[in-house]
Length: 212
Image 1 (cartoon, rainbow, N blue to C red):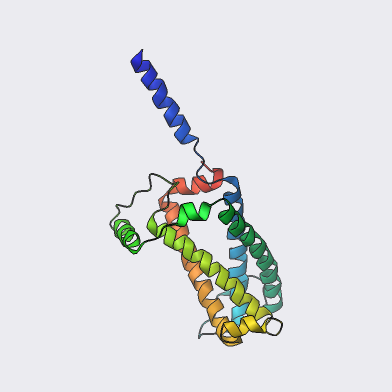
Image 2: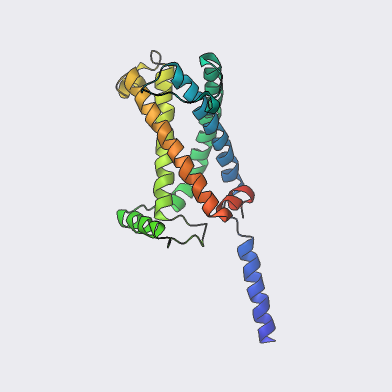
C-alpha cells in the first residue's frame, strides 16, 4: 500500500510539475507582438537607412521593407506605435506584478562570469525554466534598456524641432542617428542569440507558445 501511495504521490508531483505555468498569458502575448513589431521596424529601418547611409554600406533590398523611403517610413511609423504601446504594457505589467524584480534581480558580476563560463563549457543547466541564469538576466535587463533608448532616439530623429530638448540630450540630430543605429544593431544581435538559444533549448520555445 505504501508503494502504491508513493507512486500516486510521485505521479501527482509530476503532473503538477508538467502543469506549472512558466510564461503567463500576458507575457506570451506581449512577447510575440514585440517580436513582430521589432522585425517590421528593423526591416523598414534598413530601407530608411539606405536612403541616407551612415556608413560605407547599405542593406540588401531583399531584407528591407517598404520598397522606397516613403513606403519604409509608413511601415516604420505604424510598427513604432505598436511597439511603443505594447512596450508600455509590458513595462507596466512587469513592474506591477513584480516579474522584473523576481526574474531579473539580482545581477552580480560573479554570477554573470560564472554562468558565462558554464555556458561556454556546456555545463549551464536549463532544467528550471522558471528561473533565469545570470547571463539571461543581464541580456534581458540590457535589452529593455536598449529598447527604451532606441524609442527615445527615434523620437529625437522623428521630431527634432518639436522635441529639440530630447534631440539635444542625445547630442544633436546626427548623434541621435548613430545612437539609433547602434541600438538597432544591439537588438539584432540579441535576436540572433535569443533565437539560437531557443533552438538549443526547444522547451523554452514551447513554454513561450503554450506557457507550460
